[in-house]
Image (cartoon, rainbow, N blue to C red; front, side):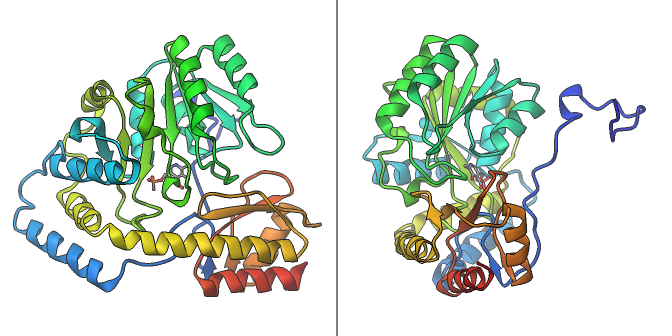
Length: 362
Ligand SMILES: Cc1ncc(COP(=O)(O)O)c(C=O)c1O
């Protein structure tokens, strides 16, 4: 078999056929391809972060708090305030982005990994990279999880980890808590963990799975500050789970993985979390306006509770339409679902640029 890896390089077999994660990072006037928050942090918050970071500079000769206690306490408070839970530092683990959280989970726990696709492409990539078999269970034609198919697959395949993304990326819809609980119970029956990836939770009004971690100790909720907190460049993700899961994280984390600068910046952002609600509301309003604008162009939009929309109903192939938009300085995402493209909700100007570019093409 042809392989791009030379024979002298003894790369792991499970890595040989993988393709790296690679959303194109090309410059465009409207960058609507990676579900970032389009609003930069306001000046006051930037100043607060700068002050906190400056305070750390005199101590950079020392390693950071490797358990990130203060930050984890603040994350627990944030979750408690938004979900009415009574979590403590022991329920939280933090890392450099939720991708690191997901990778740590895949490293720590055994068994195959199962997910409901289309969904977040890093779940299979991370699972395979750590040597797991990936079991793909298709979603229904409306991109919802088919509960009976989910139960059958979990019973018959007996994975070690089940992934559910809600709101789902790239399709945007939510899996309701009742359905998640049924999946959690089924997973529990085969001693599997249920990882609920809630990267976009703040844009949805669905009750978070953090409210069921006491009832289902096998549930791990993965969250991030990259999206609602507009903090993608700082890299801060966290999990919410039973304390025994956090104990397992301590075994595989690299010592001092979370730098003092990252911890300080994240603490500053969390201390001013009221600001975040304003931009989240703006993004939700723009999402509705953009849905209407796409529909008025004769396109179909999958109902979304996240900060992006998956749309369909155009005559061109996804690739052709994507290219045409790039030519007009608008970058969106071809997520590999035939006849569909995904667009992140941006600023008003970016959204208008996207809609007028589309209008001129269709
Ligand atoms: C569903 C989902 N999970 C996790 C992530 C990773 O986010 P981060 O590593 O920035 O926290 C993303 C990023 O787009 C995502 O869409």
